[in-house]
Image (cartoon, rainbow, N blue to C red; front, side, top):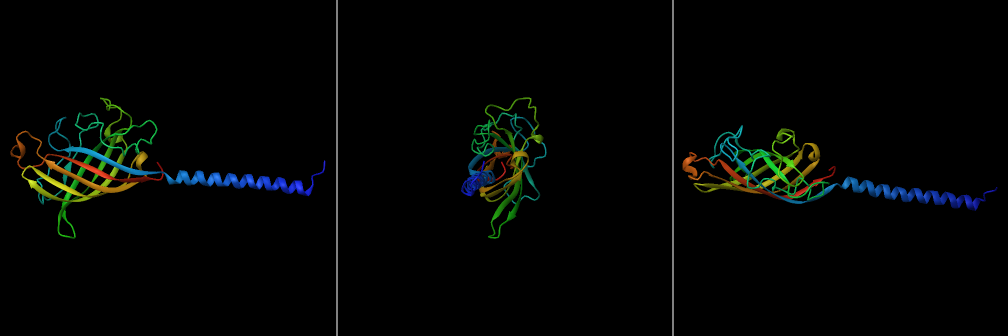
Length: 232
Protein backbone atom coordinates (compact mmCIF):
# COMPACT_ATOMS: atom_id res chain seq x y z
CA UNK A 1 0.00 0.00 0.00
CA UNK A 2 1.35 3.40 -1.02
CA UNK A 3 0.70 6.55 1.02
CA UNK A 4 0.53 9.66 -1.10
CA UNK A 5 2.34 12.82 -0.01
CA UNK A 6 -1.01 14.59 0.25
CA UNK A 7 -2.43 11.91 2.62
CA UNK A 8 0.71 12.02 4.73
CA UNK A 9 0.53 15.81 5.01
CA UNK A 10 -3.14 15.62 5.98
CA UNK A 11 -2.42 13.07 8.70
CA UNK A 12 0.44 15.15 10.09
CA UNK A 13 -1.76 18.23 10.11
CA UNK A 14 -4.48 16.32 11.94
CA UNK A 15 -2.03 15.11 14.59
CA UNK A 16 -0.56 18.58 15.04
CA UNK A 17 -4.05 20.04 15.33
CA UNK A 18 -4.97 17.50 18.00
CA UNK A 19 -1.78 18.23 19.94
CA UNK A 20 -2.41 21.95 19.69
CA UNK A 21 -5.96 21.52 20.96
CA UNK A 22 -4.72 19.33 23.80
CA UNK A 23 -2.19 22.01 24.69
CA UNK A 24 -4.91 24.65 24.79
CA UNK A 25 -7.02 22.52 27.12
CA UNK A 26 -3.98 21.74 29.30
CA UNK A 27 -3.09 25.42 29.54
CA UNK A 28 -6.67 26.26 30.46
CA UNK A 29 -6.73 23.56 33.11
CA UNK A 30 -3.40 24.73 34.48
CA UNK A 31 -4.61 28.32 34.59
CA UNK A 32 -7.75 27.18 36.39
CA UNK A 33 -5.76 25.23 38.96
CA UNK A 34 -3.35 28.14 39.49
CA UNK A 35 -6.20 30.59 39.92
CA UNK A 36 -7.35 28.98 43.18
CA UNK A 37 -10.26 30.57 45.03
CA UNK A 38 -11.07 34.09 46.11
CA UNK A 39 -14.03 35.90 47.58
CA UNK A 40 -15.43 38.03 50.38
CA UNK A 41 -16.17 36.91 53.93
CA UNK A 42 -17.40 38.02 57.33
CA UNK A 43 -16.79 36.67 60.83
CA UNK A 44 -18.06 37.24 64.37
CA UNK A 45 -16.10 35.93 67.39
CA UNK A 46 -16.35 36.24 71.14
CA UNK A 47 -13.30 36.41 73.42
CA UNK A 48 -12.78 36.16 77.17
CA UNK A 49 -10.14 36.29 79.90
CA UNK A 50 -10.46 35.28 83.53
CA UNK A 51 -14.02 34.06 83.46
CA UNK A 52 -16.15 32.48 80.79
CA UNK A 53 -18.91 29.95 80.31
CA UNK A 54 -16.37 27.15 80.85
CA UNK A 55 -14.40 28.70 83.72
CA UNK A 56 -10.90 30.23 83.76
CA UNK A 57 -8.96 30.27 80.49
CA UNK A 58 -5.17 29.75 80.37
CA UNK A 59 -2.59 32.42 79.52
CA UNK A 60 -4.94 35.42 79.49
CA UNK A 61 -4.53 39.03 80.65
CA UNK A 62 -7.47 41.47 80.56
CA UNK A 63 -7.18 45.07 79.35
CA UNK A 64 -8.38 48.20 81.14
CA UNK A 65 -8.99 50.21 77.96
CA UNK A 66 -6.05 52.53 78.57
CA UNK A 67 -2.33 52.60 77.69
CA UNK A 68 -1.72 49.48 79.76
CA UNK A 69 1.90 48.31 79.56
CA UNK A 70 2.66 44.82 78.32
CA UNK A 71 0.51 42.48 76.25
CA UNK A 72 -3.21 42.00 76.77
CA UNK A 73 -4.39 38.50 75.86
CA UNK A 74 -7.91 37.23 75.23
CA UNK A 75 -9.07 33.80 74.09
CA UNK A 76 -12.25 32.35 72.71
CA UNK A 77 -13.50 29.36 74.66
CA UNK A 78 -12.56 25.86 73.39
CA UNK A 79 -14.30 24.49 70.32
CA UNK A 80 -16.51 22.26 72.47
CA UNK A 81 -17.66 25.12 74.71
CA UNK A 82 -21.17 26.55 74.56
CA UNK A 83 -20.94 30.18 73.43
CA UNK A 84 -23.48 32.53 71.81
CA UNK A 85 -21.79 32.05 68.43
CA UNK A 86 -20.74 28.41 68.89
CA UNK A 87 -20.52 26.80 65.44
CA UNK A 88 -21.75 30.05 63.92
CA UNK A 89 -18.66 32.13 63.27
CA UNK A 90 -17.63 32.62 59.64
CA UNK A 91 -17.90 31.61 55.99
CA UNK A 92 -14.11 31.98 55.61
CA UNK A 93 -12.99 28.47 56.72
CA UNK A 94 -15.20 26.80 54.10
CA UNK A 95 -14.28 29.38 51.41
CA UNK A 96 -17.93 30.28 51.07
CA UNK A 97 -19.01 26.64 51.09
CA UNK A 98 -16.63 25.65 48.28
CA UNK A 99 -14.74 23.08 50.36
CA UNK A 100 -16.33 19.63 49.76
CA UNK A 101 -18.32 18.47 52.78
CA UNK A 102 -18.40 21.92 54.36
CA UNK A 103 -21.29 24.22 55.08
CA UNK A 104 -21.21 27.90 55.97
CA UNK A 105 -21.08 29.20 58.61
CA UNK A 106 -18.24 27.23 60.20
CA UNK A 107 -17.13 27.36 63.81
CA UNK A 108 -13.94 29.34 64.42
CA UNK A 109 -12.16 30.44 67.61
CA UNK A 110 -9.59 33.18 68.36
CA UNK A 111 -6.91 31.40 70.40
CA UNK A 112 -5.38 33.84 71.27
CA UNK A 113 -6.32 37.46 70.50
CA UNK A 114 -3.26 39.38 71.78
CA UNK A 115 -2.23 43.05 71.45
CA UNK A 116 -0.26 46.01 72.78
CA UNK A 117 -1.30 49.66 72.98
CA UNK A 118 0.67 51.81 70.51
CA UNK A 119 0.60 55.24 68.92
CA UNK A 120 -0.12 55.55 65.20
CA UNK A 121 1.74 57.99 62.96
CA UNK A 122 -1.20 60.32 63.30
CA UNK A 123 -0.88 60.27 67.09
CA UNK A 124 -3.93 58.06 67.75
CA UNK A 125 -3.87 55.38 70.40
CA UNK A 126 -4.41 51.96 68.87
CA UNK A 127 -4.15 48.29 69.65
CA UNK A 128 -1.67 46.35 67.50
CA UNK A 129 -1.57 42.59 67.67
CA UNK A 130 -2.24 39.20 66.17
CA UNK A 131 -4.61 36.29 66.42
CA UNK A 132 -4.62 32.61 65.51
CA UNK A 133 -8.11 31.68 64.36
CA UNK A 134 -8.67 27.99 65.11
CA UNK A 135 -11.06 26.26 62.70
CA UNK A 136 -13.14 23.97 64.89
CA UNK A 137 -14.87 22.04 62.10
CA UNK A 138 -16.17 22.61 58.57
CA UNK A 139 -19.31 20.46 58.62
CA UNK A 140 -22.67 21.31 60.17
CA UNK A 141 -23.63 20.68 63.78
CA UNK A 142 -21.84 21.13 67.10
CA UNK A 143 -18.26 20.11 67.77
CA UNK A 144 -18.24 16.65 69.44
CA UNK A 145 -17.54 16.60 73.16
CA UNK A 146 -15.12 15.07 73.87
CA UNK A 147 -13.49 16.27 70.67
CA UNK A 148 -11.18 13.66 69.06
CA UNK A 149 -9.00 16.50 67.68
CA UNK A 150 -7.61 18.92 70.31
CA UNK A 151 -7.65 22.64 69.46
CA UNK A 152 -3.84 22.68 69.20
CA UNK A 153 -3.97 20.16 66.33
CA UNK A 154 -6.75 21.86 64.37
CA UNK A 155 -6.02 24.02 61.30
CA UNK A 156 -5.35 27.69 62.00
CA UNK A 157 -5.62 31.00 60.14
CA UNK A 158 -3.07 33.68 61.14
CA UNK A 159 -4.10 37.32 61.30
CA UNK A 160 -2.47 40.61 62.35
CA UNK A 161 -4.27 43.90 62.98
CA UNK A 162 -4.02 47.51 64.09
CA UNK A 163 -7.08 49.39 65.31
CA UNK A 164 -7.47 52.82 66.95
CA UNK A 165 -9.61 52.65 70.09
CA UNK A 166 -11.60 54.84 72.45
CA UNK A 167 -13.18 54.31 75.87
CA UNK A 168 -16.79 55.24 75.20
CA UNK A 169 -17.84 54.68 78.82
CA UNK A 170 -16.57 53.18 82.02
CA UNK A 171 -18.05 49.88 80.87
CA UNK A 172 -16.88 49.71 77.25
CA UNK A 173 -13.94 50.44 74.91
CA UNK A 174 -14.42 50.25 71.14
CA UNK A 175 -11.82 49.65 68.42
CA UNK A 176 -11.89 49.74 64.62
CA UNK A 177 -9.10 49.33 62.09
CA UNK A 178 -7.52 47.00 59.53
CA UNK A 179 -6.43 43.37 59.53
CA UNK A 180 -4.30 41.18 57.28
CA UNK A 181 -4.32 37.41 56.88
CA UNK A 182 -0.91 35.85 56.28
CA UNK A 183 -1.30 32.13 55.86
CA UNK A 184 -1.93 29.49 58.46
CA UNK A 185 -1.56 25.75 58.88
CA UNK A 186 -2.78 22.74 56.90
CA UNK A 187 -5.39 23.81 54.32
CA UNK A 188 -4.78 27.51 55.02
CA UNK A 189 -1.00 27.65 54.49
CA UNK A 190 -1.44 29.61 51.23
CA UNK A 191 -4.28 31.85 52.40
CA UNK A 192 -4.04 35.64 52.25
CA UNK A 193 -6.54 38.42 52.76
CA UNK A 194 -7.33 41.77 54.32
CA UNK A 195 -10.19 43.96 55.46
CA UNK A 196 -11.66 45.83 58.40
CA UNK A 197 -11.83 44.75 62.03
CA UNK A 198 -14.29 46.25 64.47
CA UNK A 199 -15.06 45.28 68.04
CA UNK A 200 -15.34 46.18 71.68
CA UNK A 201 -14.33 44.95 75.12
CA UNK A 202 -16.67 45.16 78.07
CA UNK A 203 -17.56 43.94 81.56
CA UNK A 204 -19.84 40.91 81.16
CA UNK A 205 -20.20 40.49 84.92
CA UNK A 206 -23.75 41.30 86.07
CA UNK A 207 -22.26 43.83 88.50
CA UNK A 208 -20.35 45.57 85.69
CA UNK A 209 -16.79 46.85 85.91
CA UNK A 210 -17.14 47.44 89.65
CA UNK A 211 -16.81 43.68 90.09
CA UNK A 212 -13.77 43.35 87.81
CA UNK A 213 -11.59 46.15 89.17
CA UNK A 214 -12.10 48.17 85.98
CA UNK A 215 -10.84 45.40 83.71
CA UNK A 216 -12.63 44.53 80.50
CA UNK A 217 -12.65 40.76 80.82
CA UNK A 218 -14.73 39.96 77.73
CA UNK A 219 -15.05 41.18 74.17
CA UNK A 220 -16.40 40.61 70.70
CA UNK A 221 -15.04 41.48 67.28
CA UNK A 222 -16.09 41.16 63.67
CA UNK A 223 -14.15 40.91 60.42
CA UNK A 224 -15.24 42.04 56.97
CA UNK A 225 -12.83 41.39 54.13
CA UNK A 226 -11.67 39.45 51.11
CA UNK A 227 -9.45 36.38 50.72
CA UNK A 228 -7.35 34.58 48.12
CA UNK A 229 -5.90 31.08 48.20
CA UNK A 230 -4.07 29.98 45.05
CA UNK A 231 -3.43 26.49 46.42
CA UNK A 232 -6.60 25.63 48.37
